[in-house]
Amino acid sequence: MPGFEIINKAENKEVNSIFKDGNGVLFRQGFENIRKNSYKVKTFEEKFRKKFKSKYSLAVTSGTSALRVALACKNIGHGDEVITQSFTFVATVEAIVESGAKPICTEIDDTLNMCPKDLEKKINKKTKAVIVVHMLGTGANLSEIIKICKKYNLILIEDTAWGIGAKYKNKFLGNVGDIGTYSFDFAKSLTTGEGGMLVFQNKKNFLAAKAWHDHGHENNPNYPRWEDTRSSSGFNFRMSELQGAVGIAQLKKFNNLFNVQKKNREKIITKIKFIKSIKIRKKPIKTTEAPESLIFSFKNKKLAKNFRINLLKRGYSTKILPEAISWHFAGKWKHIKELELKKNNYFNKSKNILNRSVSIPIFFKMKKNFPEIVLKSIEDTL
Ligand SMILES: *Cc1c(COP(=O)(O)O)cnc(C)c1O
Image (cartoon, rainbow, N blue to C red; front, top):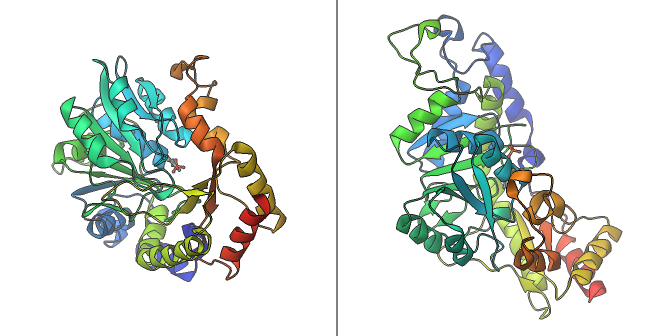
């Protein structure tokens, strides 16, 4: 589970250094004569880019704003359609709605991510981009989705809020499509309290995003900021130095966090995989997983619900599935009128899979007997 488990003196020290060594400058740029060369957001971006082998990186205020900026830098808006998947956090669809484009969701398949066949069915002349989500740590079926995006000339954005550190072939998720977005909210595996990051393959997209997230500022070196040139309209999604400092400290711990979680996840799998009547989530070929959670499905909805009750009785909870489905499944989002949910289109295929599925949180500080507790809770259920 998340970065909040590992917050300690290192984050504290990095934040304090803004005041100790950087004269308390909290703005990501400028103020050169005061800040004594202390640049936390810039450093965080650089270190992130190096770690995940991205070409360009831009820190922002949240994972949601990262998605919004991704659409803005490609000029996606009114009259356009953007396709994402029915199983995601509501933020993915909200970012599309905020851009002015129309959100379209696909069904999921047994990877619990975007169904490539349904994606191809939903493409039309208005479709401009696809936001694929690596939901809860397992990569989407990228080899198929890339082919489809190429065939129809669509921009591919990867919502990597849960996929950080996982790979497709030899690339870290987020670096496979045109743009990748990440979230550092308090429930994610790397956290800055609130925060997000974008990575880009292409300099033009990066520069457009960098300007748009800062009111269109080009940060032209020939002018002071208040006389700066403007490349576009924009908004304010700038990350603050306080968040940047926390990000630097968290990033240093990431490898250890990832490896420990991976081992913990394996321990649970080893314990339960012999049970024939549960099915562990399918992983697409050529992808590795981020050990964010462990998802498996029962034969029916009732068993999934009972499993959660049995886990709660032992003092533990599931994570998102089944309890938080209303925030993570488009079939429930009647409040988003732009989705145009109709009676015959509540994503029945996705609903059938999700209703039977449960998700186990993977903790960094996992209790030794947790795999046994998961096993016992399954046995009680069946
Ligand atoms: C967390 C999350 C987001 C949004 O990130 P915030 O930083 O909370 O705004 C977007 N997409 C998915 C899939 C998420 O889980």
